[in-house]
Image (cartoon, rainbow, N blue to C red; front, side, top):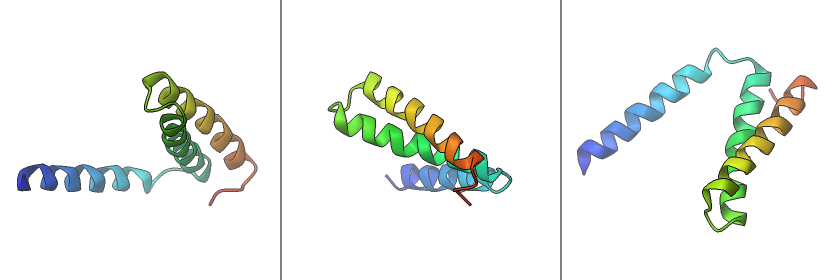
Length: 72
């Protein structure tokens, strides 16, 4: 159990380190995809298609917001 927690913490740290060099537009795209995926999962009763669809739509919206400078 402790090993799983340590692996999860290590993976989170690697993911956060990878975000350090992202442009604001890329950060908005990733954030939009994450929020969209979560929303799609909730609205579709955790269906895979709903989750992927929500992530795709959220990523497109986040990318557009990032291009306009709305995400820093």
